[in-house]
Amino acid sequence: MIKFVLVNPTEDIPEDYVKKLVDDLNLDQSIIKSCEIYETTPFGEKIKLESKIAGSFYFIETEMYTHNNSKQLFFSIVPQVIDEEFDKDLYDLKFYIKNSLRKDWEECIWLNDEQSSNYAKELYADIHELENQLRQFINIVMIRTFGVNWWDKYTTRKIQDKYKARVSSYKRVAQSYANVSDRLLSIDTDDLLDIMTHKIKKFSPKDDYIVTNLLESLRETGDISTVASEYKKIIEKLKKECDVEIDVWNSLFGKYLSEDFIQAWKDFGKNRNHVAHNKLLDHHAYTTIKKSIKEVSDLLSTASQKFKETSLSDEEEAFILEFEEERKAKLEMLELERMESEAGIRIMDSSSIYDTFEENVSDYIETIKDSIYFRNDLETETNSIPSSGDGDHDLLEIYSHINENKLVITSRLFIDEESGGESNLTLKLLSNGELVETCELTYTNGEAQLSDDHTYYLPTKYNKFSEGSIKEFIDQVDLQIGESFPNLVEVVDRAKYEAMRNGGRDPVSDSSCEECDEEYICIDETIIEIGTCVNCGCINEIRECDRCGEYYNPEIEGNSSYCQGCLDYMDKQ
Image (cartoon, rainbow, N blue to C red):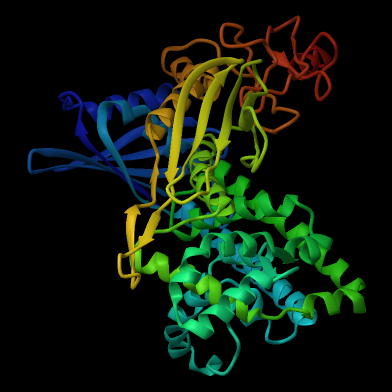
């Protein structure tokens, strides 16, 4: 069953509104063979419709109600025969009716769609299986590499805390598994990627006489002020002597998975959330998500096979297991933490400031990419903010398969990691090389000093991150996307509707695109060059039949002069 409701007409609805709909349906010869009202009820009409392609019958019931001066027109569509196979006629019919009436109403609310639900059921089963496939791979790789206690040493505190917050309720529900390790089953899909890309740093002192002398002075005098006055020098020394000891991705998972996996898993996560959060699914979304699942599954299957065929050497295992804590480094780091805690500030180093900008900018870029996620005619290329270097660097490039336009967002980063220092990131939007908009993000480091009696720290400047005019910047990006890359699929869909409603030539060929297999090959040169697929931009070799004037693909049907229909006709003569 399909059920939806139209709410609040934009203009007064005539009494024969549904009858006019039936008349319009009868005029459509692409998917509808016949349509008639067979019963009128006190609240609406009951309609019987026969599809043209499969000859299937459908029963449509309309009901009009008014609540609080708000008119509501309910539609329900039920097929006469419910088949386990996908009902293409029902799929086309529900959207045709919705699109025919949508402009007359302020809201359209989808209430029930069994086709969308069936898509979700199938996809969710595949998603569940794939998630657990990755969890199994991570578990096996980490246990064989780091040992059974890898969770405590090689995951972040954030992930560990998330597990602790959830584990009691999970085990209470499924008590038969209460004595089974379920750590990876109790965290989110994004956390799995964080585990695989985690970087573990180690304090590697080369000459610690400065720290030793200060600690000795503290032991002899008990005066913390000496240590406090030198904390910047100590922190600078400690930062320079902290090296990345284990890059889990580069040293482990990157040997079995390509870099493509990281982006593929991020895309999968978005698709997974779309299904898990009960969003509606049409056929295009279903095929896109199905393709994403297969891509990740293929990469993961290859990685699992590689891992089975290889093993870590003694040298690699010794390097990974050689990890120890540094007591002296912790003592000095705790002093910095005390200062930040007492003063209520943060003094971040260059790396942390960079991460702050990167995290926020990544969210902005993802918001922009999400807005064009289902545009097959557009491609994007993204880059991280360079941590060093002068000049502007490309963050995001958007270009089309249909026209030559190009949008680029660039960044220029300046970092001042001193206490109280101000760092800034300048974003620029360029359209075909011309500057359109700029935006500046800023971060101010915290600053503190000891009180007069040297017993506690007082803030002199609080740390602050400012987004500047980022909202207006993103709005301008959306505007430029609309102007530089018009959505020709929507243009063609409107033209198709007008052709069906008012008569005229369909703006697209009956042939499917050689690249994307969608029926969006344009044959209306007022929209775009004939033969161009407005869905993906592919140029298809189509010709106009010398006899009937219809367009066709000579590589698939007919010959160089006539379409297949005309050839069949001439053969019979």
